[in-house]
Length: 368
Image 1: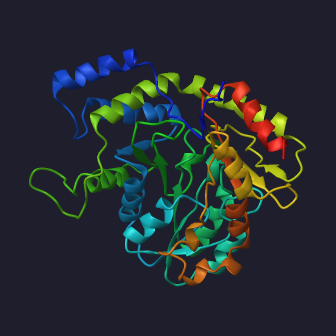
Image 2: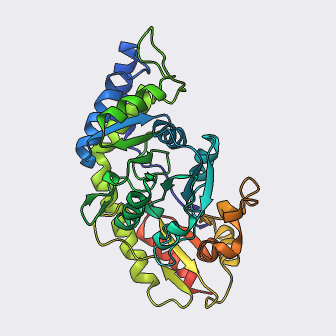
Image 3: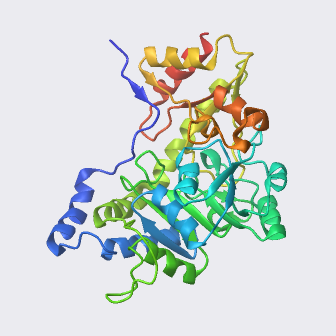
């Protein structure tokens, strides 16, 4: 019998029967968008679930990043990481700002605080770190630098739903944290995103930005756009919250299985997970020169076997045409990020992944 194909991730979905009552209510009320009852309920329930003060829901994580930059009225340059999904740098460019790339730490793959200070100029107004693969950045070191130079901090927390650092939710750090609820994320609303903030006045501004800048029927004091989450997406989010703890536990089991079975494989490095609460969003490995074949050769062997892994993040943002001419994008300035991009491979991880499928994946790695 031919092995079934395995994908790097699959959306976590509750039974359709549980979603139908929500759908029926939307049909009955005809309230489809514009901060309807499910939208408002989801914002409240997420605040409780995540232990944060305020959340503004969005149609997706990218527009949430753009809104966050706009809400803080930034100008000039924003220091960020090249080792991320393109939306991180794109949001900066789309906002009329210049991304300035700084290298990453080789062990965590997060923005290296020790490199940030040297990149600050008189045009720098903010830092946008990424909690890569859901592993918390060094939030204290980053905040010390931001306070010293009067900079704003916006965390791209797309991977960090319900992740904790040493002092509680990682989402409470910085001026704003931005989440993605894309279908591939631990918590998803088909498409969606959110901005987490501790300042209710900033939330008001963010809510206006995502609704064309509208305050009321007569007042539109600033430019905005349509970034609102629909009732359909919000309804799915409410239902997802009921299943999430169980799904994360299933992810944890898969993560632990990978770690145990990959231990001691020459040339394969597994990224150490944070000691605090994790969400097991991804399972990245680094394929070094000590491994018998290259990362790309291993990637091809997986594809040939019907196992769809991902080189996540490759190509590196700083090596893409829109950014490669920026001074800070030079490869010599970003050795750790370039090395990680050439070595990284994200293995499949999702609640429905069976242990025998994990064993099949590990066996392919061990067989080289």
